[in-house]
Amino acid sequence: MLDNLPRGTICIEDLEIGMKRHLTKQVTDRDIELFAEVSTDRNPVHLDDDYAQDTIFEGRIAHGMLTAGLISAVIGEQLPGHGTVYLGQNLRFIAPVRPGDTVRAEVTVMEIDYSRRRVQLKTECHVGHQLVLKGEATVLAPSAKFD
Figure 1 (cartoon, rainbow, N blue to C red):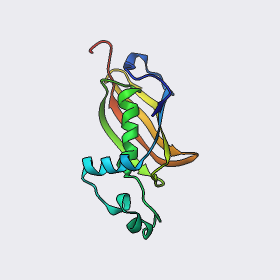
Figure 2 (figure 1 turned 30 degrees about the horizontal axis):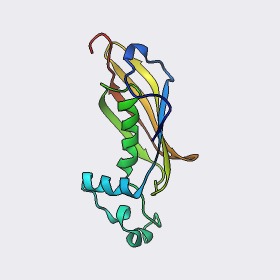
Figure 3 (figure 1 turned 45 degrees about the vertical axis):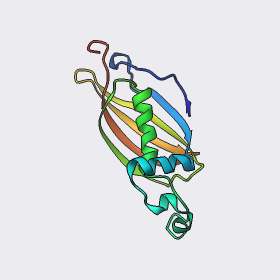
Figure 4 (figure 1 turned 120 degrees about the horizontal axis):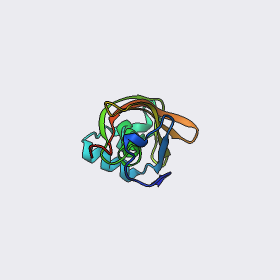
């Protein structure tokens, strides 16, 4: 995994509109198999080459929530980071992610409510120049005053 900044915490007092963080990860067959095991989602479109070839995807794809999990990693590890509490997330899956694809998950600060410690984040994943997932997250950010 490649990050643009070290892991840790950015307290709400230090957040700014437009602040961005990302990570890049190649999705492997092992990632897909482990996600299937943990989630119990064993849909053959993710695991069976022959089955998946006859679907609209014409081949195996990663679980959408595996891709979305990379957004969670950026939020929980980088922006705002450790101590962040996820309050909500909406997602729109635009294109499939396939085994071997390298996904760039990016989070951008859109709004900050300092009094309630709420932060609205733009969330996106790309494979190359192709947008594959987009959405928004609401989080409770850690504060230097309380943590």
